[in-house]
Length: 230
Ligand code: ADP
Ligand code: MG
Image 1 (cartoon, rainbow, N blue to C red):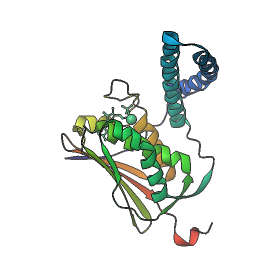
Image 2: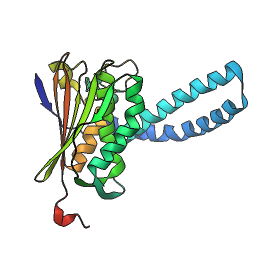
Image 3: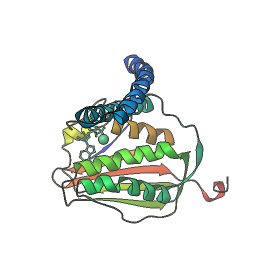
Protein backbone atom coordinates (compact mmCIF):
# COMPACT_ATOMS: atom_id res chain seq x y z
CA UNK A 1 0.00 0.00 0.00
CA UNK A 2 1.36 3.37 -0.98
CA UNK A 3 0.38 6.80 0.25
CA UNK A 4 1.15 10.02 -1.54
CA UNK A 5 0.52 13.66 -0.65
CA UNK A 6 0.27 16.18 -3.45
CA UNK A 7 1.30 19.71 -4.31
CA UNK A 8 0.13 21.47 -7.43
CA UNK A 9 2.65 22.42 -10.06
CA UNK A 10 3.24 26.07 -10.83
CA UNK A 11 2.32 27.06 -14.35
CA UNK A 12 5.23 28.00 -16.55
CA UNK A 13 5.17 30.43 -19.45
CA UNK A 14 3.99 27.79 -21.89
CA UNK A 15 1.17 26.90 -19.53
CA UNK A 16 0.12 30.52 -19.28
CA UNK A 17 0.25 30.90 -23.05
CA UNK A 18 -1.90 27.80 -23.46
CA UNK A 19 -4.37 29.22 -20.96
CA UNK A 20 -4.71 32.43 -22.91
CA UNK A 21 -5.22 30.50 -26.15
CA UNK A 22 -7.86 28.39 -24.41
CA UNK A 23 -9.59 31.58 -23.37
CA UNK A 24 -9.60 32.95 -26.94
CA UNK A 25 -10.82 29.67 -28.42
CA UNK A 26 -13.83 29.56 -26.12
CA UNK A 27 -15.62 32.47 -27.79
CA UNK A 28 -15.72 31.14 -31.38
CA UNK A 29 -16.63 27.75 -29.94
CA UNK A 30 -19.68 29.24 -28.25
CA UNK A 31 -20.80 30.80 -31.54
CA UNK A 32 -20.39 27.52 -33.46
CA UNK A 33 -22.30 25.69 -30.74
CA UNK A 34 -25.19 28.15 -30.99
CA UNK A 35 -25.54 27.61 -34.75
CA UNK A 36 -25.26 23.85 -34.43
CA UNK A 37 -28.05 23.89 -31.86
CA UNK A 38 -30.26 25.78 -34.31
CA UNK A 39 -29.44 23.39 -37.14
CA UNK A 40 -30.00 20.34 -34.94
CA UNK A 41 -33.54 21.57 -34.27
CA UNK A 42 -34.29 22.01 -37.97
CA UNK A 43 -32.90 18.72 -39.23
CA UNK A 44 -34.38 15.24 -39.15
CA UNK A 45 -32.99 11.73 -39.63
CA UNK A 46 -29.30 11.06 -40.11
CA UNK A 47 -28.30 14.71 -40.42
CA UNK A 48 -29.83 15.43 -37.02
CA UNK A 49 -27.65 12.66 -35.56
CA UNK A 50 -24.54 14.28 -37.01
CA UNK A 51 -25.42 17.55 -35.31
CA UNK A 52 -26.12 15.78 -32.01
CA UNK A 53 -22.73 14.03 -32.11
CA UNK A 54 -20.96 17.27 -33.07
CA UNK A 55 -22.68 19.11 -30.21
CA UNK A 56 -21.56 16.42 -27.78
CA UNK A 57 -17.96 16.86 -28.91
CA UNK A 58 -18.22 20.66 -28.75
CA UNK A 59 -19.52 20.31 -25.21
CA UNK A 60 -16.51 18.15 -24.36
CA UNK A 61 -14.12 20.71 -25.86
CA UNK A 62 -15.78 23.43 -23.77
CA UNK A 63 -15.41 21.36 -20.61
CA UNK A 64 -11.72 20.76 -21.27
CA UNK A 65 -11.16 24.48 -21.82
CA UNK A 66 -13.04 25.39 -18.63
CA UNK A 67 -11.00 22.84 -16.65
CA UNK A 68 -7.80 24.19 -18.07
CA UNK A 69 -8.69 27.80 -17.39
CA UNK A 70 -9.84 26.93 -13.90
CA UNK A 71 -6.50 25.34 -13.28
CA UNK A 72 -4.56 28.29 -14.70
CA UNK A 73 -6.59 30.82 -12.78
CA UNK A 74 -9.14 29.49 -10.30
CA UNK A 75 -11.83 32.11 -9.77
CA UNK A 76 -12.77 32.48 -6.13
CA UNK A 77 -15.31 35.19 -6.76
CA UNK A 78 -18.01 34.55 -4.25
CA UNK A 79 -16.65 33.62 -0.83
CA UNK A 80 -19.27 32.37 1.58
CA UNK A 81 -19.89 30.02 4.48
CA UNK A 82 -20.35 26.58 2.94
CA UNK A 83 -21.87 23.72 4.91
CA UNK A 84 -20.00 20.67 3.73
CA UNK A 85 -22.41 17.81 4.53
CA UNK A 86 -25.21 19.59 2.64
CA UNK A 87 -22.84 20.23 -0.29
CA UNK A 88 -21.82 16.56 -0.30
CA UNK A 89 -25.45 15.42 -0.38
CA UNK A 90 -26.02 17.67 -3.40
CA UNK A 91 -22.97 16.25 -5.18
CA UNK A 92 -24.02 12.67 -4.51
CA UNK A 93 -27.49 13.47 -5.82
CA UNK A 94 -25.94 15.02 -8.93
CA UNK A 95 -23.54 12.10 -9.56
CA UNK A 96 -25.96 9.25 -8.77
CA UNK A 97 -27.15 8.85 -12.41
CA UNK A 98 -23.49 8.62 -13.46
CA UNK A 99 -22.81 5.95 -10.82
CA UNK A 100 -25.94 4.00 -11.79
CA UNK A 101 -24.73 3.96 -15.40
CA UNK A 102 -21.58 2.13 -14.26
CA UNK A 103 -23.56 -0.03 -11.82
CA UNK A 104 -21.61 1.47 -8.92
CA UNK A 105 -23.16 2.06 -5.51
CA UNK A 106 -22.46 5.67 -4.48
CA UNK A 107 -23.36 6.66 -0.92
CA UNK A 108 -22.72 9.02 1.95
CA UNK A 109 -21.32 6.93 4.76
CA UNK A 110 -21.33 9.27 7.70
CA UNK A 111 -21.34 13.01 7.95
CA UNK A 112 -21.28 15.86 10.40
CA UNK A 113 -22.22 19.51 10.08
CA UNK A 114 -19.10 21.53 9.28
CA UNK A 115 -18.39 24.89 7.68
CA UNK A 116 -15.72 26.05 5.24
CA UNK A 117 -15.23 29.63 4.09
CA UNK A 118 -14.75 29.49 0.35
CA UNK A 119 -16.33 29.72 -3.10
CA UNK A 120 -19.01 27.04 -3.09
CA UNK A 121 -18.71 26.20 -6.80
CA UNK A 122 -14.96 25.75 -6.63
CA UNK A 123 -15.12 23.39 -3.67
CA UNK A 124 -17.88 21.46 -5.41
CA UNK A 125 -15.78 21.15 -8.56
CA UNK A 126 -12.77 19.89 -6.59
CA UNK A 127 -14.76 17.15 -4.87
CA UNK A 128 -16.81 16.19 -7.94
CA UNK A 129 -13.60 15.49 -9.89
CA UNK A 130 -12.41 13.14 -7.13
CA UNK A 131 -15.74 11.32 -6.80
CA UNK A 132 -16.02 11.00 -10.60
CA UNK A 133 -12.57 9.42 -10.77
CA UNK A 134 -13.55 7.01 -7.99
CA UNK A 135 -16.69 5.99 -9.92
CA UNK A 136 -14.74 5.61 -13.17
CA UNK A 137 -12.13 3.36 -11.51
CA UNK A 138 -14.75 1.07 -9.96
CA UNK A 139 -16.05 -2.03 -11.77
CA UNK A 140 -19.77 -2.89 -11.83
CA UNK A 141 -21.18 -3.86 -8.41
CA UNK A 142 -18.39 -1.95 -6.69
CA UNK A 143 -18.82 0.81 -4.11
CA UNK A 144 -17.85 4.43 -3.69
CA UNK A 145 -18.44 5.89 -0.24
CA UNK A 146 -17.96 9.44 0.95
CA UNK A 147 -17.64 10.37 4.60
CA UNK A 148 -17.15 13.61 6.50
CA UNK A 149 -15.47 13.93 9.86
CA UNK A 150 -14.47 16.91 11.92
CA UNK A 151 -11.81 17.29 14.54
CA UNK A 152 -10.72 20.60 16.01
CA UNK A 153 -9.96 22.96 13.16
CA UNK A 154 -9.95 20.39 10.39
CA UNK A 155 -12.61 18.81 8.24
CA UNK A 156 -11.80 15.50 6.61
CA UNK A 157 -13.64 14.41 3.47
CA UNK A 158 -12.83 10.79 2.62
CA UNK A 159 -13.70 9.18 -0.70
CA UNK A 160 -13.21 5.42 -0.84
CA UNK A 161 -13.62 3.23 -3.87
CA UNK A 162 -13.40 -0.50 -4.45
CA UNK A 163 -11.84 0.19 -7.84
CA UNK A 164 -8.78 -1.00 -9.68
CA UNK A 165 -6.30 0.99 -7.58
CA UNK A 166 -2.97 2.45 -8.65
CA UNK A 167 0.66 1.38 -8.66
CA UNK A 168 3.31 3.52 -6.96
CA UNK A 169 4.37 4.72 -10.40
CA UNK A 170 0.81 5.79 -11.21
CA UNK A 171 0.42 7.52 -7.84
CA UNK A 172 3.57 9.48 -8.58
CA UNK A 173 2.18 10.74 -11.84
CA UNK A 174 -1.17 11.91 -10.47
CA UNK A 175 -1.73 15.63 -10.85
CA UNK A 176 0.93 15.98 -13.55
CA UNK A 177 -0.17 17.85 -16.63
CA UNK A 178 -2.32 15.68 -18.93
CA UNK A 179 -1.61 12.40 -17.12
CA UNK A 180 -4.51 10.09 -17.91
CA UNK A 181 -4.95 6.35 -18.34
CA UNK A 182 -8.41 6.72 -19.88
CA UNK A 183 -9.29 6.57 -23.55
CA UNK A 184 -11.26 9.80 -23.39
CA UNK A 185 -9.49 11.24 -20.34
CA UNK A 186 -8.01 14.72 -20.21
CA UNK A 187 -5.73 14.37 -17.20
CA UNK A 188 -6.95 17.74 -15.97
CA UNK A 189 -9.34 16.65 -13.21
CA UNK A 190 -6.81 15.91 -10.46
CA UNK A 191 -4.79 19.02 -11.28
CA UNK A 192 -7.86 21.21 -10.97
CA UNK A 193 -8.92 19.57 -7.69
CA UNK A 194 -5.47 19.91 -6.23
CA UNK A 195 -5.18 23.53 -7.20
CA UNK A 196 -8.55 24.39 -5.64
CA UNK A 197 -7.87 22.43 -2.45
CA UNK A 198 -4.56 24.22 -1.98
CA UNK A 199 -6.20 27.59 -2.64
CA UNK A 200 -8.63 26.83 0.20
CA UNK A 201 -5.67 26.00 2.44
CA UNK A 202 -6.26 22.27 2.48
CA UNK A 203 -4.42 19.15 1.37
CA UNK A 204 -5.00 16.00 -0.66
CA UNK A 205 -3.56 12.58 0.11
CA UNK A 206 -4.20 9.41 -1.86
CA UNK A 207 -3.67 5.87 -0.65
CA UNK A 208 -4.06 3.08 -3.14
CA UNK A 209 -3.65 -0.62 -3.63
CA UNK A 210 -3.92 -2.43 -6.93
CA UNK A 211 -7.10 -4.50 -7.17
CA UNK A 212 -8.34 -3.25 -3.79
CA UNK A 213 -9.12 0.41 -4.31
CA UNK A 214 -8.20 3.97 -3.56
CA UNK A 215 -8.82 6.28 -0.63
CA UNK A 216 -8.68 10.03 -1.27
CA UNK A 217 -8.47 12.18 1.83
CA UNK A 218 -9.16 15.90 1.55
CA UNK A 219 -8.35 17.97 4.62
CA UNK A 220 -9.98 21.40 4.75
CA UNK A 221 -9.74 24.20 7.31
CA UNK A 222 -12.92 24.39 9.36
CA UNK A 223 -14.59 27.68 10.26
CA UNK A 224 -14.51 28.14 14.00
CA UNK A 225 -17.67 28.65 16.04
CA UNK A 226 -16.94 32.32 16.73
CA UNK A 227 -16.57 32.99 12.99
CA UNK A 228 -19.71 31.18 12.01
CA UNK A 229 -22.12 34.09 12.44
CA UNK A 230 -20.19 36.08 9.79
P1 ADP B 1 -8.88 11.79 -16.24
O1 ADP B 1 -9.97 11.39 -15.28
O2 ADP B 1 -9.38 12.67 -17.35
O3 ADP B 1 -8.07 10.62 -16.72
P2 ADP B 1 -7.67 12.96 -13.88
O4 ADP B 1 -6.69 14.04 -13.69
O5 ADP B 1 -9.02 13.14 -13.23
O6 ADP B 1 -7.83 12.72 -15.44
O7 ADP B 1 -7.05 11.60 -13.36
C1 ADP B 1 -5.77 11.20 -13.84
C2 ADP B 1 -5.55 9.70 -13.72
O8 ADP B 1 -5.42 9.32 -12.35
C3 ADP B 1 -6.69 8.84 -14.24
O9 ADP B 1 -6.62 8.66 -15.64
C4 ADP B 1 -6.48 7.54 -13.46
O10 ADP B 1 -5.51 6.73 -14.10
C5 ADP B 1 -5.89 8.00 -12.14
N1 ADP B 1 -6.89 8.01 -11.05
C6 ADP B 1 -7.44 9.09 -10.46
N2 ADP B 1 -8.29 8.73 -9.47
C7 ADP B 1 -8.27 7.39 -9.42
C8 ADP B 1 -8.92 6.39 -8.59
N3 ADP B 1 -9.79 6.74 -7.64
N4 ADP B 1 -8.62 5.09 -8.83
C9 ADP B 1 -7.74 4.73 -9.79
N5 ADP B 1 -7.11 5.60 -10.61
C10 ADP B 1 -7.36 6.91 -10.42
MG1 MG C 1 -11.00 12.63 -13.95
